[in-house]
Length: 248
Image 1: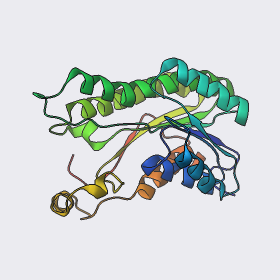
Image 2: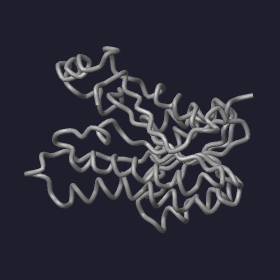
Image 3: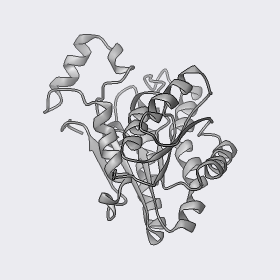
Image 4: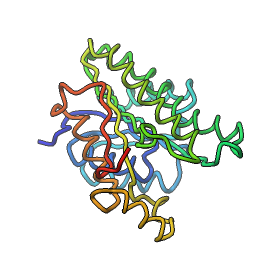
């Protein structure tokens, strides 16, 4: 029996990177998986096929998590297709980095909308379902820069800090119905995006990390699997950094 046997998870932005790693690990632990990205294409179909190797039900959906009506429609469709939602992972996110003096209103609005409003929209949509079930686990992807800030990332840092405040607030509201709400805060994780950084930048990052290496997407997925499972049955309102000891 896997840690997530007979559970259904909905994961946003899971076509690649951390989201995909979470979807794969959840399925390997016995979970049926619904996941989203902005459009249904060859990449989504390939991701579906990859996740399905674990013998669990999986389906990808084209959805904009930041759109309130779209989020509601998505959740209704997932419940129709899967029967329930036990776990929500708010993973969708973007960056549009810039120094404040050059940051445009569009850069600010886009990052806040995708990273923070999506968490509100998706959580609001699943809340009645989990409330009726009397249980659920909501996991939102924040970041170490949401705790400590980062130069040239005021919009991203603000969005990820907002996720922390939102998570702590809803944990207080929903705990009475056994709905657990937690955030994870990854540090320097190797993804397709970070892999494109010059070697000297990677080395500078590693010097700041006591474990002297970047994290992997699977290491983030492992913590999310713990929070999604009954192993974390008394854990709510928490923010767990996954950063190798990076000073934050």
